[in-house]
Length: 402
Image (cartoon, rainbow, N blue to C red):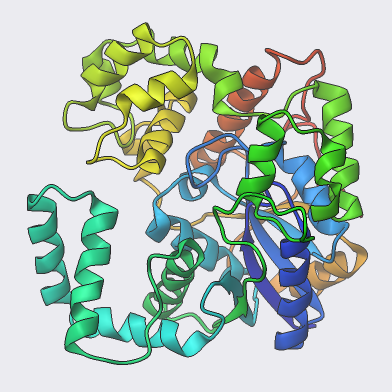
């Protein structure tokens, strides 16, 4: 059984994701689709709309055969760490191909861009350093250095201003750096861009657009056209059980408390808190009545919204710099759910896996896993502010069989 790997958040799973799963299987001639999925907190530094169990069920209902969890230290990392963790897990579970969605739609420009940077690494790093000294944010410095190299060595390259191209580049980079047997492939993203608002004349909308619609007061019924039936069922179930969807705005009282219970000096222990930000955090948290007001006060040219959100995620979950950077490699494969075909695939390969397979966490003691368990506890605490129902706990929840 040949397996294709995909890296996902499914926040939530929508019709564009359905297209991606189908095309990934078709173009790579794979019988099995393995999704490595972020848990309760995501790469842009925010809580997931619904928990990982609901999102796993969405995936299994729509063509994914096996869902494994991307540990917190990778799922909330910058693009390089995010990609590295995901690639290592898909390689460990013996995927033949990693198929990612992109604005580019062709793998050759990704390979060209990788070789452009790798073959000119010293010059590239020098340009980055110069741009940072000019006051640019790190992502801006990276992009500027890349654009300068492109002018020196003309070829067909990817546009690194596009968010899915950026992640795709880092998947390719990780595959090459780690010398994986798994090969990269890409699926053309269709209809809706990563940040696009929803379009009533289309059945494809970005996850960002769907979340914006929900948080602006639109009903679930108003976004049904963008979602597969499996997603609709899970979102309806969540709304019945918990009333609201998770967001930093709804978690704000707890996040504000997490900030203000520390002195500025104590905040410096947490990942991504640096360069005086600890003072601004305390100042603006005390003065802000909402998450949006807080972020608008905190935002500056030097720090992207995503960088700040990741920092806040680490403060909220209590993950320190030392903890976040202690793990560059996954230590296990944790199964969140599988179909019958996924179960057959696991049974066939489990004796030859390079990492231990975890289906139940109660008997496992691992510091990397402990961070995930705490993240779930903190996510649950946020949900309980507006819900009488508990979310499924890690210790009590076996892998979902679909």
